[in-house]
Length: 412
Figure 1 (tube, helix red, strand yellow):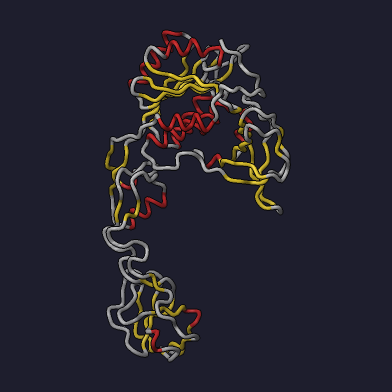
Figure 2: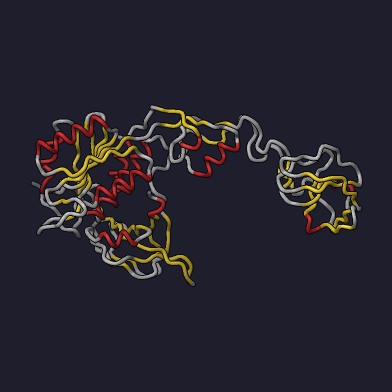
């Protein structure tokens, strides 16, 4: 078996984060199956076709402010108030020379008017309005089609539907949308040491926390989640579970059992029903990673340490899921440049994903490390709101230096 490098030693055979992610995405085909949903059920789904505006948005010129609709060519001359118009209740007459109509935000612009004088610039004397400035043509008016022209694509296939996208579709009067079906993801954790929540731990035993992290991350991505539970370190049981998962899911995730000491054994087992690559990753936390195919399903074997499980999920599994569920690029999390509030320690050799918190103060937005950074310290990640990415070649990060940051809320 090949020599395993220490945590701080560079392994020339280890894959970089970028290399591994590129290989994973290249082997992650998007779904093609679709379904039609009511708009109220489409949150978090991915559009399967372009949505074009069937009519102009807005459909009619309307007022952007509360004020008075009038003819700009009359200048600052007094205007006779001849009526009112409200949103949903248009004025049916025509605004002539020397006339105006009281108008509220969103109301259709009356015929004859080409400007809206805001109410703060109007002096009222009985039923006469005295403009306090010369109204400009088109002032405070939302023109028809200003947002969208008929036939123009409002949203493209591959768009992830969030509240703003749902509101846009609703503004077009569309009650249903065609979306890609949910990605089915089966997952389980491995290890004789794992125990159910609420049970009493004996020496060497731990609670099975990874499944709850995976379930939460998968639910936030909108997947159809299939929890297969805790699997003992038994070859026959494990193979049966893998086969069951591959038969029911588009993507299978296991945690634990992919360390260098176990890799040869696991590789032989999984090779019977699939094609699996075991990679040593040039990253911390999350050194071991397995990726490949189990039948028609994509497979990920993630490390067992809880922080490693979540960090590798964010960097590799989530981009794969986003691509497979039909979302258009980007699939990888955005990286921001933010100055460090305090220095961070690091030894050269591996890309380091340290847990951090954002700080907003007199010096603007900064980022700081959170507590201990070992891969088994879950409390640090639980209190973090971002990951601080320190390059493999870096040996330290002084206070004030710009570092790469991924927001955890932007991940899942």
